[in-house]
Structure formats: structure tokens, C-alpha cells
Amino acid sequence: MTLPKIYITIDDGLDPTHSIEILSLLKKYEAKATFFWITQKAQELHDNNIALFSEILSLINTDGHEIGFHDPADYLPNLKSRIWSHFSFAEFTKGLEDLSKLTGKNIQFYRPHCLLQPLNYFYAKKLGLKYILSSPNGYINPEAFNYSDKIHELVQENTVLVLHENYTLVRSSSNGESLLPLVLDKAKEKGLVTETLSNR
Ligand SMILES: [Zn+2]
Figure 1 (cartoon, rainbow, N blue to C red):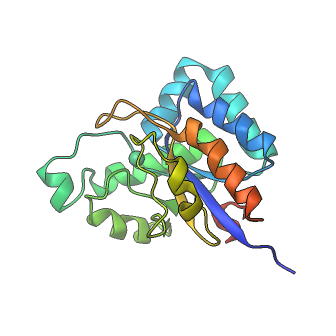
Figure 2: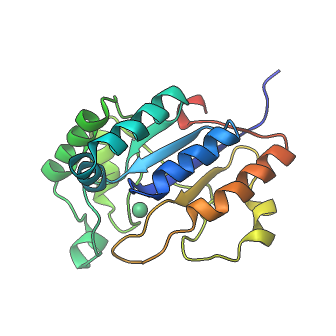
């Protein structure tokens, strides 16, 4: 018998405070998640606090989480990123290679950091990455803190849910850490197993 599943994905890491909190919440619930990391943010934490970076990576490995690619850098969208891509193919490729080196992972999944870069779909395909968006009802607005009454609809079998663990250039807050316990409680209540995207 296979149990019903849900896929929690967490964007915009790494973050020096939230990432470790999110990992300990996942451990508490014995839940698995897929983290979409921005290469620049991973590089910064690696360079500024190698001990914390290594601790996070080792938790990801021992607890069975997964890492996906979420663009080379954080950016403010402009006309070029809306019509084409914020990055050249060379920059995109280097971002993926650097993230693979930093994490020691063979990265399989890509999610764009903003939904404004149509070329990135083709970049990802060319590099053999699977392009992952949220399910139609699976996107959790990172600036909304009044989500309690919507969790029941969001947490459904086979949904790819998107949470955010970090602030970005376009916003100064992220609600991933505060919403994750609600999501995980609801998943438990509905008998859903939280899995990584590879186990989809
Ligand atoms: Zn993002």
C-alpha cells in the first residue's frame, strides 16, 4: 500500500537563522522537504560561516532532504528579466555548477526565483533539469501571515507546496518558518506523508 503524499518545497535559502530552524522543525515532524537554494546565498553562508553551512548540509543529508537550484543570484526584475531572462545561459550554467560544487550534489530540479524569465525554462531543459513550479493551489504568499484558515485547502494529496525561508530584494519578510508547523500539523491530520520531489 502506498500512502498519500505531499511535497513541501522551500525557496530562497540559504539563510543564517531560518534555515536551521526550518530543518529542526522538519526533524521534529520527521518530514522531508526539497530546498531551492539561490547559489549566491549558499556561497555567502559558506564563505561567512562554514561551520553553520556544513551543519545545514549534514542535516540535509542525514534527514533525507533534497536541494534544487533557484537561480544564480537574487535580483530585482527588470525589462530584460521579464521578457527573456535575468541571466545569460553562461551565468545560469555557472550558478548551477557552483551550487553543485558547494553542496556536493547532483542537482536535478530547477525553480525560477521570479516567474518572469521565460528563457530559463529552456536553460533548465538544456542542462537536464526538471522544471518545478508550485501546484495551482500550492503557492504560499511569503508576505501573508494570516494563513491559518487557508491551510486546510492548501495541504492536499499530491500538492507541490511552495514556502519561503528568506527575505529577498523584492520583499523584506518570509513566513516559511512560522507557517511550516501549521502545514506539517495539517499534513499529519490528513495522513499525508511529506516527501522530496525525487520520491514523487
Ligand atoms: Zn525565490
